[in-house]
Image (cartoon, rainbow, N blue to C red; front, side):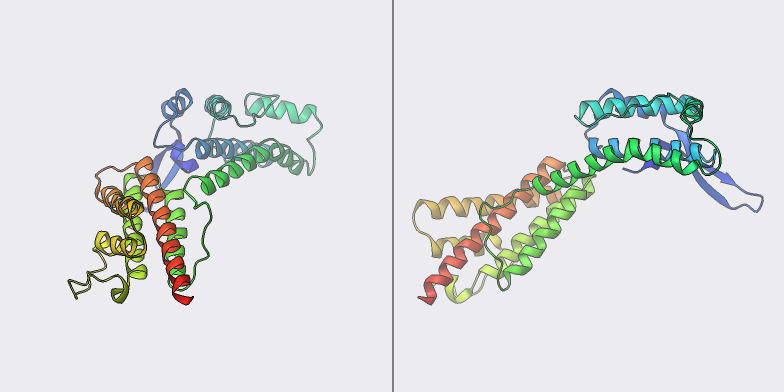
Length: 296
């Protein structure tokens, strides 16, 4: 979400016929709806950050050059109210202002001795000290969410050989999921999951070790259920064999469903990602154990 998303675009045409787009008309109904209740398609932390950034920049503009604001006193009050509500319902630090509009800010800085030559820097610093610490808290919360929103193996095995490529793909998957907002983005997450599963199939399966003795032909890489199933079957026996083969098959099915879904959402994409990450860790652990046994 960007600050411009809070405004309706206004197209202006100059005397030469060239068009420019400005974002100066605040979506007041939209802002009030966001204050009333969260929306599933808008991240609350990002919303809080955008509202605070807008307020900070507007007050700085008024306090330094006295112009360039996109808000009036009335629309400023709408944004202030929305920001306070969003911060409170998300358990974020709240700001305290001794004024409610631009003119009140002017009265305040004159009262507090922030007027005269060169005092614009004091007014800028004053506003930044109010809003920047809260924005820093929000960004820390976003970073924490990014690190924890997807599964991490309990004891991640060091990636060696071709497995390092799978690890790189998983890192890219995490980044893709962290920035996904739309159904198209979540579908792309599903596509990345399918690519990782096929990567596991390519790296883990060795025809001379996992091939079927009754069939000398090697299954194609995209036949992941067969190839990964054989990796598990050759390395394990008994009930765990069946359980893990079922996990591998289910992971592939979930990933493909997200990839091909018409309107996949964050939950579906996150579950598919978690399943793929865990599958990668399990198969790598199995393969490492097999390699260590072979060296003995």
